[in-house]
Image (cartoon, rainbow, N blue to C red):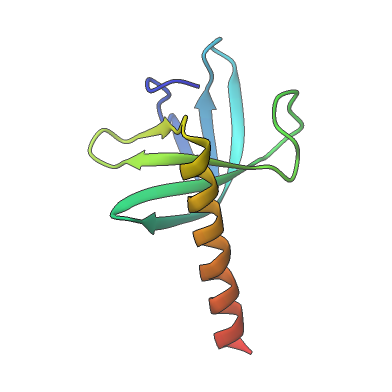
Length: 97
């Protein structure tokens, strides 16, 4: 997916994106997190997909001004955002118990 990927439709936690080849891919919104001053969406595939495993988390930078989701090419940044999200989730779970 490239920078022109547009958030087409949001119904509850379902998000519909269009890939580079014009195919519609449905995702479920796992969460939105803020990391180093930027917002990121964490998505899970809502239906079977050749390119994305069922339990694979897909992360996009959220551009609120343009209402778009921007792909992240930097693998290190992807890992940092995912690790940060997991740490926040773990802390939230610990506070609830």
